[in-house]
Image 1 (cartoon, one colour):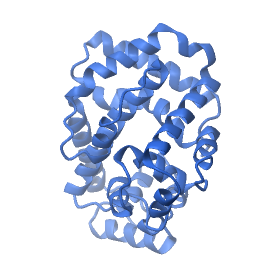
Image 2: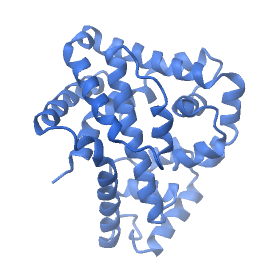
Image 3: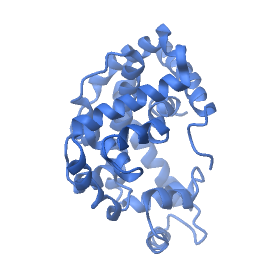
Length: 276
């Protein structure tokens, strides 16, 4: 049976993830003098952590090619400040949500869901969770739709930090994690390579390393050992993410899942995410 932590993360993720695809993001980031693409994405995602150097971004993003991060991050902080970029990120989220949902955001269930997440976030320990900890230092937005986005973001980055810990403990590099993800069939390898800026030679080398370890077959599909490894990492990620979700009653979890399904369906139907 799928864990509550994984199930609710999947139901709620589009409400957070829209910020990486909506045009409002580029509009607000470029207004600060940033270029479209990696500059806006990387700067906005780490803005909550302060003006961290490129190596911290490489560590916390994990599966991006470091070569595209090293020149970008210092330039972000030359052009703008973390505070300005964090404010721009929230403004972009607000504009995108308003465009997609309109008056739906005024319903009481949005505020109720935000308060529900605000109640469970204190169960998330910040130790070893750098992206989560940086966001935890930010103030909760007053607007219900933004408070809900912020709560989902906190829980999402908490889970993500734990996922990286699980992968690291298994000796899996960032690019190897992408090759493993591609083997699931969830996202084409070409998309993962392009969005994380890995070249073909690096990808083939990582895949060959996983073949040597016995996790993939020569066609790049899972072996039984590789499938067991993937499942163990996902299960460990769920375990590491479980503490806040365990505070929900069964009725609260069911209600939140239903709301997440509705909101996510609206976001997807609006054409927010690229077709693969």
